[in-house]
Image (cartoon, rainbow, N blue to C red):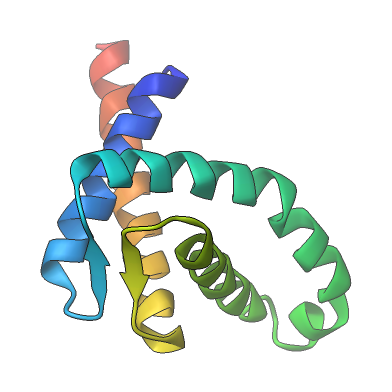
Length: 116
């Protein structure tokens, strides 16, 4: 799937989750697109560094600390993008879990429809 379609699908999921979760707010669909772009950049640039620094804790918790890293990435994006609000760590954790779950389902569906 090309990059533009992935960004648009992620933006749609971000806006949909913001409408479902009371602790998350997004001002507009354009803000959702910006969130998707910044989130992708943070996952490429910052997340590997955080994983490297927290590797001992991640090993001790059998990888569950990666959920904390995902929530921290969401909170960092909240600080960088105006118009995106998350009320706290637990909402960021739930948002990141649901975002990852929805992305995996939709991206897999697009791959299956493309191959048929």
